[in-house]
Length: 102
Image (tube, rainbow, N blue to C red; front, top):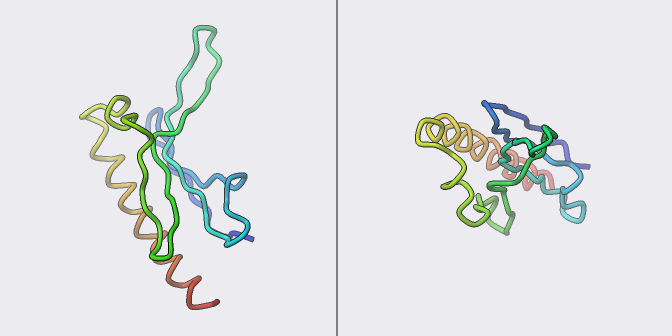
């Protein structure tokens, strides 16, 4: 079972671990950057801007098309990028420690 948990919120953005999408075969966490929005009827929904994908060297941040460029303003990029960097550091540390245990 995957034990990596993370959640950070800023305005309409969130970086979170999505356990329903974790890779149960090799126990890698699925971490995503999402943006919350509302439809015309006021119902909230979210969509993925970026996510971490795993390979034999660790995790890589993958953008979903150009969504980060079209949905993150220049005023919001600094705090979001800093948090993505911190998440990346935590994921790399987690990956190294998990690899040592196997």
